[in-house]
Each structure stands twice: as structure tokens, then as C-alpha cells.
Amino acid sequence: MQVIVRPTREAACNLAAAIIEDQIRERPDSVLGLATGRTMEELYAKLADKHQRNGLDFSLVRTYNLDEYIGIPPEHPGSYRYYMNKNLFEKINIDLRNTHLPLGMSRDVAKECRDYETSIRRNGGIDLQLLGIGATGHIGFNEPLSALKSRTREKPLTPITIQQNRDLFPNPDEMPRCAITMGVGTILEAKRILLLATGAEKADILAKAVEGPITAMISATAIQLHERCSVIIDTAAATKLKELEYYDWIYQNESEWAPYHRRGL
Ligand code: GLP
Image (cartoon, rainbow, N blue to C red; front, side):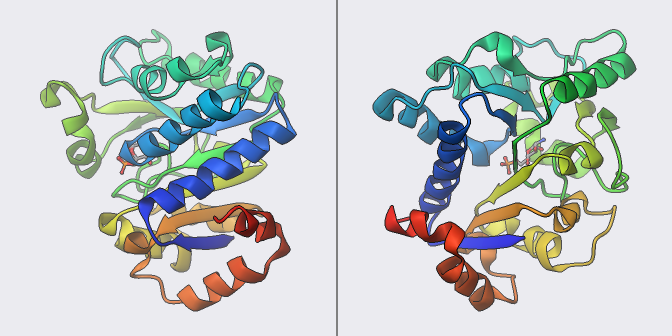
């Protein structure tokens, strides 16, 4: 794992956007795993900007989102399909047929979950999986006690998560109590993981995820098992980490990051 601390939220988003840009330029038909939440809004705005100003081409890119609420239609303003269309897909030249989210209105949720896994596999697996982190330490909607080998499935949301996300609904009481989420095991199969977290409210859970023991009680700790995982955060989210100097030394000295330094990142 690499932990990269940037001075501001904007700088953290710039680095994450540059990594995604490089992935797409290197492999134009990349399969991206995408995340939602407030943190990603700025990142998606930067990717849209790269498309509009620098011609970053999404025409062959394929995407799979981590999760979707159960029981609301895609056109509901609280749905993740709506979020993705609004924040990213409508602003870039992606073919919407290549964008995938679980269908929260599916009448057979178990089959929908199986089909989602099959579809990811048929597309060759996820090249780069973007992750945020929720207040409970979830990745996707893998709430506490999610098996570290779990696959895409239905998951009830914790009261803490409902509290965290309910204001994103026009009518907060309409927030669903369950979601379909990729499992921790599904996420760990991505070839590369990029976790982005910003803001002081993430500092405690982030320190547990990065420096704490691996536990099903905090699904984000599972990223410690991944061989190619970069955690990009701002200073506000980094305050509870113990080994900051070491992380920075690695960022400054590992050859992989030299091209990013040259770009001022
Ligand atoms: C939701 C998503 C998670 C995301 C989290 C963080 O719960 N299911 O994938 O990581 O939000 O949200 P925010 O960026 O708003 O803090």
C-alpha cells in the first residue's frame, strides 16, 4: 500500500484524476470501478474537465459502480445512477451502454448480483477500482461484519450510514435501508485500487483502515491485502496517521511517482 498525503483536497483530487487519466491513456478501453459520495464530486469534475479541455477520450472506457440503493428507480435523484449521470457520464464522451450499476429495482436481487459479477468477469475484470470510505469504514456498502471474501449482494445499511447519506436525498426520509454492493472479495480482485479520502471527519476511520488490524468490522482494512493499492488523502484526513514521514519519504523516492512530481503533483 502507498499512502500519499497532499496539502489540500484539491491537490489530492488532482493526483487521483491524473492517475485515472494515465490509466485511460495507457489503455483506452480500461474497465474502471467507480464510487459515489461527496468526495468524488470534485474528482469527477476534474475528469470531465480533462475530457473537455485536453480531449481525454472515454469512448471505449467501461465502468462498474460499487453499489446502488434497493427500491428506487435510476431516475430518482437519490440513486447512484442519477449521481453518476449528473456528475460524470453526461459530461464526458462515454457510451452509456458501457456504464454499469446494479439495478436497485430488480425483482430478483440475488440474480442481479450474480449477473453483475458475471458481467465484470466477462469484461476482463476491473483495471482500476476507485474507493471512498464511509463513516463506518465501509467500502462500497460493505458495512461492519461484511466477510472479507464477500461477493456482490444485498446489504442492509447501518443507522450511521443512513445518517451520513440521508441528506443527499431530496426527501431524507426516502433514503432506502438496503443496497446492492460489490463484495469486499469482488473489490480486492481489481488489478489496482485507488482510495480517495478528504476532510477531518475521515481522519479517525482512515487511520484504522490504513494502520489498524485487518477486521471484518471495518471493511476498508481489507485494502491492506491488496498488492497495488494507493491511498490518496489530504492533510485534514491524515492527522491520525502515525507514520506520515515514512509515507512521504516513499512518495518522494519511489520511481513510480517521479512523473507525477514532474507534473507538479
Ligand atoms: C457512500 C458510498 C461509498 C462512499 C461513501 C463516502 O456510502 N456507498 O462508496 O465511499 O459514500 O461518502 P462521502 O464521500 O460523501 O463521504
